[in-house]
Length: 619
Ligand SMILES: Nc1nc2c(ncn2[C@@H]2O[C@H](COP(=O)(O)OP(=O)(O)OP(=O)(O)O)[C@@H](O)[C@H]2O)c(=O)[nH]1
Ligand SMILES: [Mg+2]
Image (cartoon, rainbow, N blue to C red):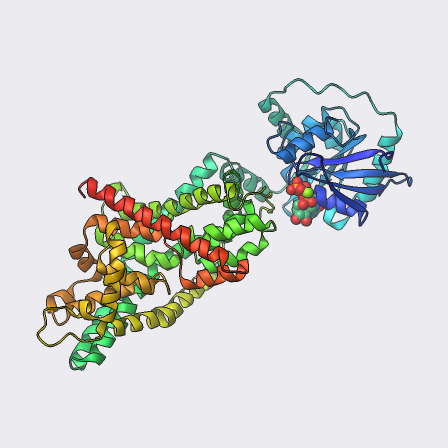
């Protein structure tokens, strides 16, 4: 094989090199490794138009010849003829993505400057056409000074033409390799690439031009990130700003229901069950439906407009820095709804260690079940005032809680990738969809589905946990005339008292310890549990019964305790279902136990630090 002429496929990541390689070589492939590095060498045999065989290698995707990763170093060294275990190629086939031409031409210009016999495969012309962009290969060829052939690798279009052109190229005497041009100014190459890409345009629809213009901002490494942060910021502001009225309405309904039950039934167990357990317990969670729907309204809108994929693309660089693949973005994003679908979505990540890392950090994304917990504490302890005109403090705190979860996840990923899940990470594969106006019926349907999921949870898992808690809180009854309160005397109260020994140092009181246990069934139960505790605790005290859960919390918890409680919920292990799905997806107990363990430690430390700091500052 070594006597055959060698042709290398080279280009940016995702240009379609491997697709082209597979289409050209079929099953005649050989996998190996480059000596001394873990980079795979993929080679195959290809027959030229005149029947001559050549050896084709598929090189790792690279953005430039200034290589950073081991993959990129191999690509650079091969094309420069410096790679151990490889000859310098007799010809290059540079693969570029037609719909992303100005970016891909930068590397192409660098490669062409090497002076090797070169062909450019203008790939993915199907996608360009779909998006309303038509390019002239002849103009491109004239500008670049090398043959350019339009291809659609996945449909095997343009391959014969490529084989012909390659036969011609390898038949002629190889031109003398020019010395690589001296370091060219990055900006100069970029401008040149942009100019050539513009010159090659035959037709571009206004919508594509608009998309390109928007993307120049949305995908910009600095402005794009600012835009993303801005959007998230607005989203969390809206969660508070828009939800006041509907929440007040639901609260009003719950209160009316509790009052009519109180009027209709005599004092007794049934009344306590309905009022303390069902209406105050479950009702305290249902109240957050408007906020959850507002959150999802934004998420659905961002998805439907085509922005979400851009956000993923934008985050890819950041995620790569902590050792995650860009593919992890979608599972992590789903985890904002719930970690369970998020963890299941990691199946699209091919590399096992990449995938495991993503599974392990998914619970750090703030799932929607945590929103009621955050909302009730923020509502009670954070004043509803503006820090800047139009910027509410409550929304800002909520934004910070979400960001803390994300930063925590990134740090954990970084540490895991250096220790337990060490290994290389993969590249990013995603196609930018067109921007479009979302269809209202899609958004409405999406919101409806979220509402149904939430209310189902309230009616099943939250209801059940609350009822069990109500029973454990209501029995046994303290002896008549005893000074011990009902909650203290109950089974739940005693268990919580025991648990509180561990949790007291981080500022938690007995009621929190009590709420944390059933919260393992579902996060929101922390809220319903507190509501039930305080409702039972109030007994017949009219004045106490009148007060909302938020007011009761404000009366009974010092601020450092409330802040520690929030910090705990950023990191604390997820519900039992998450642990179960982790066990299933990782085939064993090892990783779910590891996950629960590290999350507990993080939550404990975070809550403790928050409590001590807040106390130190005299809050
Ligand atoms: N529609 C369309 N899709 C293509 C074409 N060529 C490749 N793809 C798809 O684009 C994606 C990336 O293609 P790959 O062949 O893996 O890209 P690559 O250049 O090998 O990427 P790296 O190895 O990461 O550098 C895959 O999902 C391909 O199926 C094309 O001509 N048209
Ligand atoms: Mg490839």
